[in-house]
Length: 312
Image (spheres, rainbow, N blue to C red):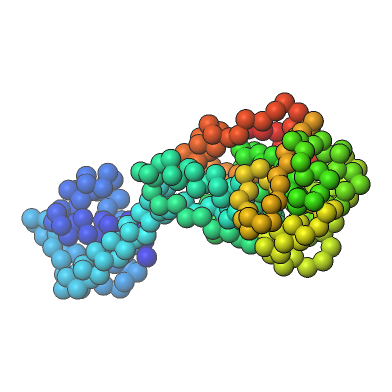
């Protein structure tokens, strides 16, 4: 049923005059009359009776009026619920221990007056799945690393969060006491990054990293979780993995694991903020500004896979 026709009917019922109702709605009297006539034809009843003093409700109009008011109130409430800024911003942070989740949390802490913010994880969805979720409205935004030529239509992608890679090793590893290491220094060492799946953006990233620096990255075997990975690193004199500089992993103090920054060049995982093109949610705008203002200071020798997006 036409919402504008309902609004016109309620306005005429309230004012008793077609002209007064038309003025209130910003339309002509002819347009108001046409809307009422269309509504009456659809319902098959007469809602308003014209008199020398204006218009009055028929018996059917009196019965219909409270229902029309309820319908308009429900419609107005539905519109307000999705108006930009009226609902929480829903952001996919990929994993709660890595850089995007930490950045969104810092944003929330820095803006105590920010409307509700909902952080979710889409699990194992790759970049294409995350972009689809953004486009369909399952989430408002998502952090993913994706080559710029693979960003789908209708999606804006901004590289706003670079996560420098670090080597994570146990105390018995030959590089455990190094202050920094170059990516080429890792050639010949066993790098274990469980959970890499073919066809994912992180799979493409590590493949490019391996090819660029002659590394051997092992993704074989089941991934039993972060705790099992930390246990394996602590026990091995040769095993190593790669983590983001802002990632928050926990392990027993006795493990004595070491984080060693990479440099010359510094590989970074280029998280891009995916959102619907033209999305005007004010919290999304504020999040973009926060990420631009608070991003980590990086050296000039940053490395990302060739052809991936430039820093925004």
